[in-house]
Image 1 (cartoon, helix red, strand yellow):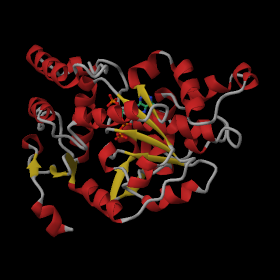
Image 2 (cartoon, rainbow, N blue to C red; image 1 turned 90 degrees about the vertical axis):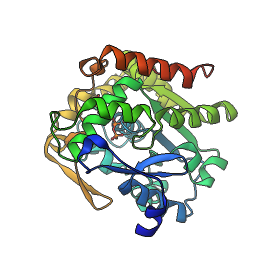
Image 3 (cartoon, helix red, strand yellow; image 1 turned 135 degrees about the horizontal axis):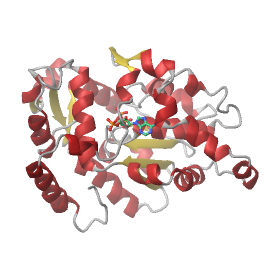
Image 4 (cartoon, rainbow, N blue to C red; image 1 turned 90 degrees about the horizontal axis):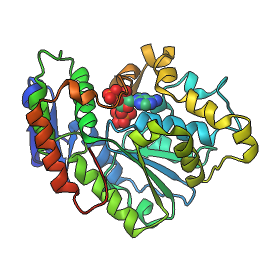
Length: 311
Ligand code: PAP
């Protein structure tokens, strides 16, 4: 593995004091840790089943929230807000990423929650996923908040303070396409183009829309993945209960998410790092006017004509 990594284009973040290195694999940047998982996976022949539901995302776009919602939806006949596994296990531990733990994803296929989560770009999904009829849900988010969220997440992982990790450098790096599973716009466009080619198999959800109107989007999500709410359930407040269970306020205040951790790709990951602020527009606390102008221009170039809005 070390030998393969050496042959790939590499980039060490200038703001990271040498602690964060990415390598490029098949057109996408990823941290070395993820690269190992991705290539391990490429060697395995993951067999997608028609009733698998893939939860796909670029990092920091709402993955934790989507995992929690999908889990609560598909397991609602077994668990409710009083006994949900989400009260004891962080969504990322309960539902590991395919590239992090392919074995768990395969086990889930035969369980009552055939959910698979991944940060893989569309072009790197196992072939069987792309050729099967399984459903894909893709969550995405305003690029400026993703830049801020990505910076804080990576900074915390390498244990640098804001003072020691200049945001401006992290911003310019992100605009060059260098972020985990970046370029962010290419990640989105891969799924977007596939959704146009394969209508009905890929649902696009925008983080901000989910926040603005969780009721209608959670119903759409449930319907799309094949677990629609009945009229009785709606009248009994089941949708509201799921929204409340999975809300940032609820999940981030659970003991497991405040103090717990789990092991992924031989690294201890603290659950609290997935729950920061969850506010829209936090980027305004970090961007200068020049940064805003630069990213608006960049996104206009990358997205124009696609029908997607990332600002
Ligand atoms: P990941 O890709 O590392 O799994 P992901 O869950 O996609 O991260 O994104 C984390 C963001 O979602 C954080 O945003 P912030 O940095 O701007 O605060 C996190 O706070 C937010 N988040 C986590 N859980 C929820 C939730 N239940 N509802 C809304 N936002 C959430």
